[in-house]
Length: 298
Image (cartoon, rainbow, N blue to C red; front, side, top):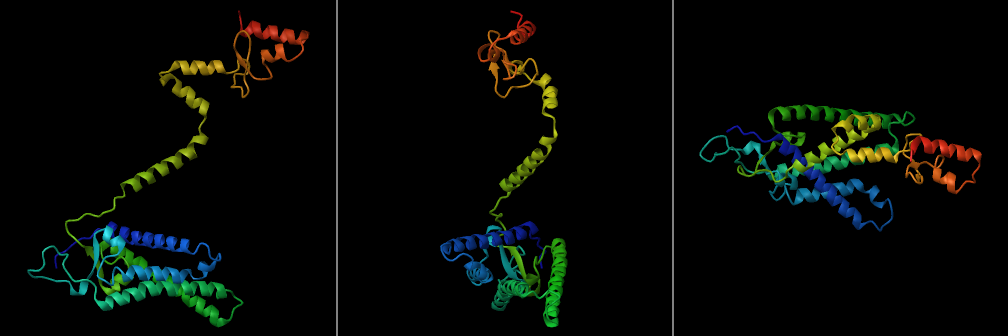
């Protein structure tokens, strides 16, 4: 057999796209029953997921067509047991028949039925509280068997993942058992989905989160003083300095303009407030005279 290498990224992306497609169909189906009694679909969520997975299997794998994710990634299932080993019919190494009827049925039972039984068993055991120590020994034993079986399945799936990363075949246990391998549908066709925009969006999201984490830790005044010599516009800095209060050297939240020097002061030091709103006495006149002589020589 001609050795061929199928991109592992394409196979993972195809599986992820199938999951997203199922989620989109589920979202549209939930909107149909949005006016019904709240919590009604929650009781039948495993059945709903199994029904959507069955629909995808029925109109893709059963009729010898790729799933939506496989179609976007230019992939199809091939029966590895009946793949041609040598001969004139072998040109690219991608030749070979699709899945047989038995493989299709077993694929549906193992994926759709297996996921449905697992989700139902988990919900039923959690509702019946099989894991509690006060339950009967039979229930606790069944709970222990379920946990051990789930742990064994995860361990075997992990080793299968390592084998897939090394050889590029059979990303799931079902595909390895059924000898259903993903190969390219057309040797001259690239994948139809580009993740450049997604990668760019992820990079900018991480960069913005880093800035939001670091910016509160920086001293803004020191950064401004450091960047001031490199600034080309000196008028903005000078006008900003003139806008500050000449007494406390701070930007007043409610500025008042002093007359006739046009200096800005906060409400507590405003000469305009002294001269117009407060009744004059000797202390007010003396404070006004000192401030005017210090900051307004004219």
